[in-house]
Amino acid sequence: MNGTRYVSGLQLARLLGEVPRERPLYAGLAGAVRGLVQDGRLALRTRLPAERDLASALGVSRTTVTAAYDRLRAEGYVESRQGAGSWTTLPGDGSTALPTPGASGGVVPRYGMAHAPDAEAGFIDLGCAAPAVPAVFHEAVEAAVAALPRHYGGPGYEPAGLPELREMIAAGYAARGVPTHADQIIVTNGAQHALGVVAEMYLTPGDGVLVERPTYPNALDALRRRGARLVPVGVGAGWDIELVGGAMRQAAVRLGYLIPDFQNPTGHLMGDEDRAALVAAARSADALLVVDETFAGLALDPAAPEPVPVAAHDRDGRVISIGSVSKLMWGGLRIGWIRASAPVARRIALARESMDMASPVLDQVIVRELLLRAGEVRAERIAVLTAGRDALAAALHEHLPDWTFRMPPGGMSLWVSVGAPVAARLAELAARRGVRVVAGPVFGADGVLEDRLRLPFVLPPATLREAVARLALAREDLQEAPPARPVRVLV
Image 1 (tube, rainbow, N blue to C red):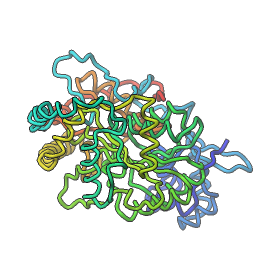
Image 2: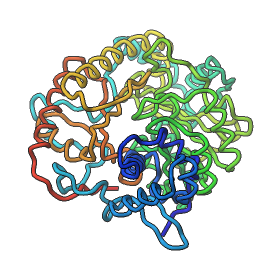
Image 3: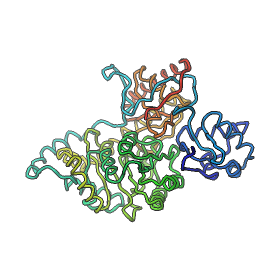
Image 4: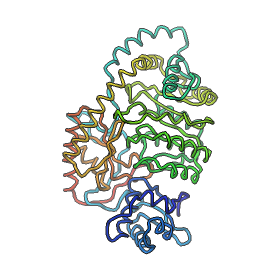
C-alpha cells in the first residue's frame, strides 16, 4: 500500500541534484534514488513521481526512468501497484539494506545502551555528546549554596520556576532578538522533560508529528510514548522547507519537532530565511512548532551566522521553544525551559503541577549563577569543542580517508558516512575494540541511515585520536568478517 506522502518530479530532481554520471544512466539514477532512501532524505512510503514527470524534470528519456524504477523494485527499494503508482520502501521486512558482506544478524542497540562492560579499562565512550563541567562550576555551586537561604522562607515549589531564573532566561531571548517576559518562561527538568510536557498537553495518540531524519533519539522515544504518529523528513543535507511544508500538509501533522541550531546529529544551522519560511509553512498546515534550542550559542566558527530564534518569526503563538543548559553548562544539571506565549505558559504551569510539581531549587540557583558567567563558560566550551572537532576530523582523514563528513560550524558531533549500510555491525565490532559509537538507524524513525555514525567531539583530542585508531581496526575486522544476515532495527 502506498503512503499518503508524495514527491513531484521537480522536487525529486532537486533532491537528486545533477544527473548521475554513472553508466548505464539508469543504474546511476537508481543508485542515486537508493542513496536518498538510505540516508533518510527521501522518506519511506513516499509516492514517487510518474516516470514521464521525472524524465521531464531530469531531462532524460522515459525509458531510463522506467529501467531505474525496475532496478529499485528488484532491489526492494520501490514497490508498485497498478493504479496506485510506486512508492519507497526498504528491502526485506524492516531491514535497512540488502545482505552485505560484513553485515551480521542482530539488533541495532537503542540510544544510550553500552556494548561493553563499564568497568573495562580504557573504554572510550563516543555514545554521548555531553561535556564535563566548566572551570567556573565549583565557584558557581559555592555562590548558589551561599544564596540558597534566601529561598528558605517559601514552600520550595515553583511550578513555573524561580522568578529570578525565568527573568534571566527571558533576558537571554530578548538579547537574541525576541522580546520575552518572565511570564512566558516555564523552567523544566531539562529539554527532554520540556518536550514531554508539551506532548502531554497537545498530543493525543495517533496525532501526526513531523520529525527530522536524523534527529535526537530520546525525542523520538518521548513522542512514541505519547502515541504520536511520526512523520520523518530528511535533513541530512539541510532543510528543504518546501518538502517540510508539504509533509506537514500531506500528513496533517499536529506539530513539528525540529532542531534548527546546530542540529543533532548533523550540525546544520538553519538560516533566517528558512526559519521564516518554516513558520509560514506551519501556519499554512495549521501545525504547532516545537523548536529545540539546546545547542544554540555553540557556534564554533567565528564566521558562522547568528540567526534569530525561530520564535522571532512567530505572530500567532505557533512556536514553542525549548532549551536546556545540558550542553553549554553540564548535563548533570537537569534544568531546561519552555518559552511560549504568556497564555500558553500559564496553561503549561498549571498542567505541570500534576506531573512533577517543580524543578529543584538548588539546581535552579546554580544555573542562575552559571548564566551570570555565561560568556566565560561559552568561550571555554567553544575552545574545547573546536580543538576536539579539528582533532577528530584530522584523525578520520588520516586513518579512515574514505569516510566522509561535512565539517559542522557548531554543535558537538560529526555525522559520518561510512560508505556502506554496515553501521550497526561496525558499532558492534568497535565495542570489541574498546570504543562505543552509535549507529545511524538510532537517529531515525524508520530504519534507514545504516551508512552513518554519529561521532561526538566532546572528549580530549588525544582520546579522540585513539578512538579513531580503534575504529580503523574495527573497520578492518568488518572487512574480514563473513557475510551474514541483514541488520534489523529495534524501534
